[in-house]
Amino acid sequence: MAEDKQNEAKIASMDENKENVSDPGVGLEILQIIKDSQQQHGLRHGDYQRYRGYCSRRLRRLRKTLGFKMGNRHKYTGKKITEEMLSDSRYLLLVLMEAERSWSYAMQLKQEANTEPRKRFHLMSRLRKAAKHGQKLEKLCESPSIDAKTKLEAQAYTAYLTGMVEFELQEWKPAMEAFNKCKTIYEKLASAFTEELAVLYHQRVEEISPNIRYCAYNIGDQNAINDLMQMRLIGGGGNMMAEKLEALITQTRAKQAATMSEVEWRGRTLPVKIDKARIFLLGLADNEAAIAQASNEDTKEHLYETLLSECRDTIQAVREELKAEKQRERGPDADTGKVSNLQFLHSYLSYIKLCTVVKRNESMAHTLQAKLKDPHNDENKRGPKPQDLIRLYEIILQSLAELSTLQGLEEDHTFQKEMALKTLVYKAYRCFFIAQSYVLVKKWSEALVLYERVLKYAKEVQSKAKSIGDKELPDVQELIAEVNAEKYSLQAAAILDTEEVNESPAERPVKDNTPLCDRLETFRLDPALVGKQPNLVHFPPGFQPIPCKPLFFDLALNHVAFPPLDDKVEQKGKGGLTGYIKGIFGFGS
Image (cartoon, rainbow, N blue to C red; front, side):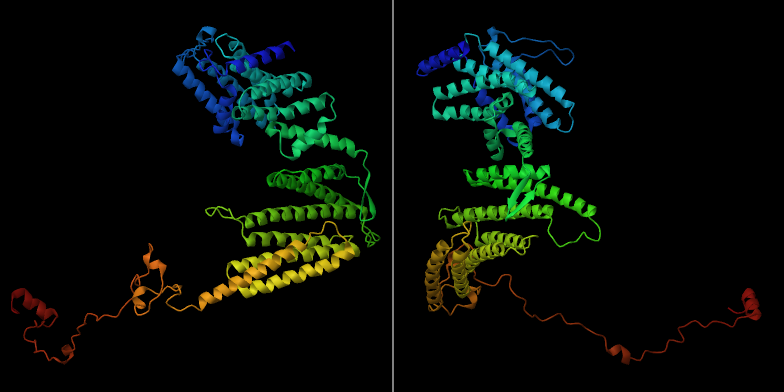
């Protein structure tokens, strides 16, 4: 209490000094520096190793700039920062970066400890070292040369690191006290400054709140579990709390599931013996309530994905149990034709999954439809098109078809009528957006026929809905009104398009690709001629025939008689021994 009064006194003195421009105290924006560095150097993507490297490099630069080196490459010489050095705020930044480096290394080890549990020892060592640097920073800030705001921020930062150490040690009460101290200081700081400066402090308070609630639950506050479940569903609490919240909620539901033994659906009571199915069915109402209370579409989409993931895992567990049951019951009387309780439970879980898919796609379709009608869409970005909505409604119709074939519901005529009626509703919506896609390409007659089909489906739904009375059935009255309005717009657009076609050639803009050189005798309005790429001539030009180079053939050679050349040809003498002797003695020459 005394410490809180001192903090309030410091904040009051800050309020009095806010109007004084010349504040002699040395200051350091601790939280601002931390947040900016973390967002710019890896923590936006959860990369603690990158942030740790940045802290090391910044420490090296600071020591070099300040001439505060710890020895040389051969020998370490420790130095301490004293109060006499605090005329320069960079010495405080030096201690802050040392604490951040140790903290980021601890968070990196926390990620790796999921697969290597022994790294938790190193994790705790780094966290304690970060808290030690934080205490050193707080002690330095007690100097009279430091301004009040920096002193309070140093206390909050130290309390946060101390709370993290106690949280990892599962010392819930000291951790809660440290986090509460941190939260109180930041809330007081936020109230002492303008809204722009207070945003950062409020964000920090929101980050700490899940840890405080988790500690309160472990101390014995059972009311905190509801807040934790809500935060887990909306993805709050950050990466550090995600696994702890998941384990806590699973443990709580497991305790409640011990008392759950059966569930009733479609007039049939089903015993639930599988623990995973019990836990899922217990949390189903909470998940659906969270989806209904979602503040924006991104949160709602995340909740739907979470629910579907849990449902798939549960169906897989039931399917494995079904296989084991079939193997146990093999025999002549195994196939009796009756749907077993386990098979009916499988159908119930499949029904939940498919209905969730329908609701999710319907929610996405409503969002896209609102964007489609928004006249302020950015032309540079690709906006939604009717084809996107057609795809969503096709998925919905496919899910409804699977619902109609669930085992054990073939003879349930009320259920089959409900599915048939919902199929008509979503066929009407799909048909409407198919007509919209035809309107975009100016196929007026096809679009008009499809609009008539939409009205046919909608009137059929209205006539059958009175006998069934399904509260979850979408209202088609708004769709009928929209179709009637679109029909009038379509008829007007078709008339204008017809008048445009019937205009004279001189008034009608050129729609073909005929170049100007081929239509010099016809006057037409062609805006492209004064644009950047006027269509004047054929380019590249086409091929034309040209005379080829003549070829010469020597045809007289076959008719020329050449003179005899016998006297010019050397006569060879007779061979044999006589010729050889004559050749030796020269008689033959």
